Each structure stands twice: as structure tokens, then as C-alpha cells.
Length: 294
Image 1: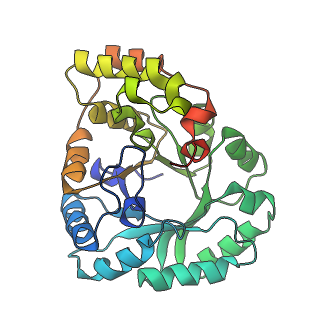
Image 2: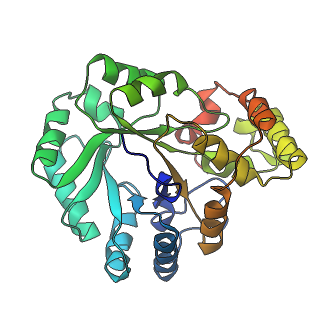
Image 3: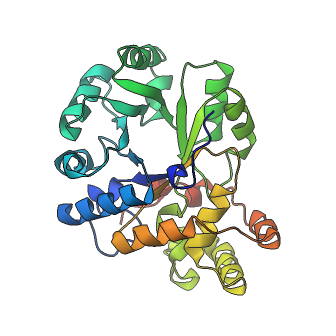
């Protein structure tokens, strides 16, 4: 397993480049000219990997428009779209390459575990892409620990998994050591839980009210240790030695620069211990796709 530098442990998520993404997002989709500025700044900071998907609106098209003008190339991860069982892996992959104006990708994942559970042979199709040299690593985007456990039990031929992980959401912790042991790269997302950690506890929508007390405690701890919430959240994820890389989403150049700064934070041991007590099990809170449409 490689040992990437701090900057390389950050992956820039690109959902905001194609959609008005995130519960705390007040500005909507990022305009393409600003995307180009953000990507150029990320390159300078040493961030070398982008995470996108066919399901992220026009994110792939946007990246395809701006990437050729950057001073250094990015490694790109994309995903096979969910709920399109009639579209072959190769067809979807080629469509992503065309939108991205790329010859190959670093990673290609199934965006939905159902794509695998409904048709396990789909992993053979991913392996064919890998054998062709068009993609370096293949795998799945996961939402539930049982999915990872089943993949491990079946010894599925995968190189990479992506799943949510944050201060509240630590459901995958028990499988992390075995994933590392099998040589499977782990990318975690939702480190800010789509912006929930930045919201005011007394202003949460009804379906997130159960999170209010823990959110208040988290913000009290950050204040007590004189650290920004974002720094606490990102440093907590980066402190886990079993996590290969952390996907971050940004809303502007300013938030990218803040995230780069946050990544240099080391949490005091006492604070880390207190954060461990904020673990949440309610998936209605932890999984944004279960939140009502706004």
C-alpha cells in the first residue's frame, strides 16, 4: 500500500461542479470559470486526484472542458451510474471518457452496490476494463458496512472502495483493518456530512432534530479548543491510519484554501477522545440520500 503525502491524501470531490450539492450550500452550482480557478489552485497545493460520477449532473462535462488547460494532470475517479441496468459497464465507461475528454481513468466504481448484488458478474466487466489498461483501479461506492463485509467474504476482485466516514458516522471502522490487510484502497466521503456540521443545532430541519444535541456538543468542543469545525472534522478523518484518502467537496476557492489549511491540523489527544463519544448509529441522520428532498 502506498504512503501518500498529506496533500495526496486529499481528493477533490466534484459534485458541486455539476449540481447544487450539500444541505448547507447557499450558492448553488459552481460556475465553470471558477471551477478552472479552483482546480488550478488544487494542483499547486499538491492535490492530484478528482472524484466525479456520471450521476453528478454535468460534472464530467465541466471537468472535460477545463482540465486540458491546467499545468499538471489529475488522476480521475468516476462511477458507473445507478439505476441503469441496461447500460453495459463498457458503454457507460466510454461515455464518461468522452465527457471527460480522457483516454483512461485512475479509478472506476459502481455507484450503487445493487449493481453488484443484482449481477455479481459485473465485477468481471470491471476487470476487463482494468486488463485493457483504461483504468488502474476498480471497485464500489458503498453505504452500509454489511456491503463491505459481503465483498470481503466473497473475496471480490476489487482494488478500491469509497464510503462515508465522519465524527458521527463510524459504522465502517470495524472493517477498515481487513480492507487494509487485503490491499484495498479506502476513500472516505461525507467528512462534513454534506455540511451538517456547520449548521446551527437549533435551526436543523425536523428530520435531523435527533442530531441536534451531538452537533451542539461538537461545536462546543471545537470552540473550547479554539479550532474551526472544519479543521476538527477533517483532522479526525485524516488521523485514522486505515483510511487511504479523504474526499472533500468545496463551494469556492476560499473553501478549498480553508480545507488545505485544515488538513495540517493535529487534534489534541483529549479532544480526539471526546469526539469518539459522538458516534451516531441512526442511518436516517448519517445517510443524506435518506433525507427528504428539499
